[in-house]
Amino acid sequence: MAEKYNLKNPAVKRILQEVKEMQSNPSDDFMSLPLEENIFEWQFAIRGPCDTEFEGGIYHGRIQLPAEYPFKPPSFMLLTPNGRFETQTKICLSISNHHPEHWQPSWSVRTALVALIAFMPTNPNGALGSLDYKKEERRALAIKSREAPPRCGTPERQKLIDEIHEYMLSKAPPVPQQSLSQDPEEHPRNEEAEAQVSPPNPEAIPAGEGLPDEAEVDRIVEESPANDNANPVGVEVPREIPASASSSQLPRPQTSVQKPDDRLFTLAAIGLTIAIMVLLLKKFIKSIEHGAVFMDGS
Amino acid sequence: MQNEEQALEDGKFEAVTSPVSAFDVWANFGDDNTMQEESVVQAEEGKKVPFVGDKEPLSTLAAEYESGSPILLEKIKVLDKQYSAIRRTRGDGNCFFRSFMFSYLEHILQCQDLAEVERIKMNVEECRKTLQKLGYPDLTFEDFFALFLEQLEDVIQGKETSLSHDELVFRSRDQSISDYVVMFFRFVTSGEIQKRSEFFEPFILGLTNSTVEQFCKSSVEPMGEESDHVHIIALSDALGIPIRVMYLDRSSCDTGGVSVNHHDFIPAAGDLPRTSCGSEASSPFITLLYRPGHYDILYPK
Image (cartoon, rainbow over all chains, first blue to last red; front, side, top):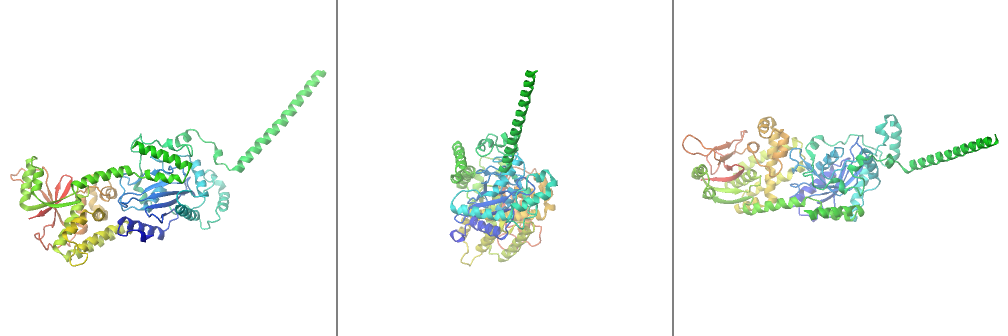
């Protein structure tokens, strides 16, 4: 990969070092690599932070490094629907809690990914490109995110995405069952369920082990919208999933998360109920008819 | 602007219907707009003043204030007795570091003070260790260190790679070198401030009411952040290089004759460079002219 680039170019030198560092210190929390054809273009995946509604989710995205890197910050964009950040939209993560516009060369792609993970469970506070989905919806998206990586780009990019997905699947524990957080008594049963869902994961990571470095994250803030008349967040989303505003006002029925089997059972139950009702009604009518006959007779 | 938003909208619509074409959106993805605007502003500024300008006689300074404040003109007359020339630097928030960079490298180039080169290299290694101890990953600062050390080696004469004075000026105007050296000084400054945070804390609290770490993250490490006394003290201490700053401002002294205030930043550490050429013993070989908000380089007679 290195041969194609001018190693005298400081940005290239720096990026190659970051690639090397990323490969020699792999993390269970994220994985990121540049395209072979262009080292300024990276693909990444992060796993949803533990003990949140994103746990077990695998979220893909892309990074673009500017020619002036590391003087100018990298840009991030998510590809996997997640309910926290819009997809196909630049994420406004500026790094520094003092002057949000200040990126600095002492940060790296790694720092930024750690920050991104840390931001998943935070309140978006209306930041641009942010979504505020309900926990159940986010959990459903987390489950869906494991099924298949997003499909996009050139075959080469797709290959990289697939590789990253495989790697993350082997590292990310499965999405915990929904009842886990609501009913602690069911714990043993859930562990069984987890074991069933994740055969390729013998050495599942203990929860909380890979929590991002808090000191680093401290400095990183999500940008609030600079001006209120900028692109309203809600307008762009509804084609995919209901926007944050509408979904918070009209709670969605639980069925959205239920599996097909459950629906079958429900149908069967309804069918049975109707049948019983019909039978009862028949009997009732019959008894009335009898009554009428008696009446007539008397 | 509106067109771009429209394009973005369209792009997003496509993104949902067909994921492949979604990648065309990338063009609209970055904040290209603001970056372009920024670079336009910088380019305009660049046309007026390069990162490091040419040496000009001090009379050009007087010409600038021709119809200005009499106090300033008086002060320039005083400066004129001691200093022969000025070299301007671009007012992009990095002027202190850039002035320091050029002034120091030019000094080494002209004096060929090899002992000083060895001395500063040891201090640079100390700064590297400081950053490592503070938890900075090597890859985030090593390029900047390497580039500075390379310039330092190249101003030493007698090698194939040795720089002439013109080449040094040329390199100082080359963004891919100049900005890296500026960033090197920013790292050194930030490391020194954090290493001696107890010493710097009161100064910083007086300036910004932020913690030492916040100050470094917001006012030292980002490019384009202007330097204050705190920066100068820290850089001078970390590298062990004294700096004289002449203040050209409207402050006047009541006691008769006009004089120009100056301050010598003398490093706290003991290992001062020997002043081997040009300047008198014990006086700094780097002299900067401060006008509110900006630093340039001064050349003594």
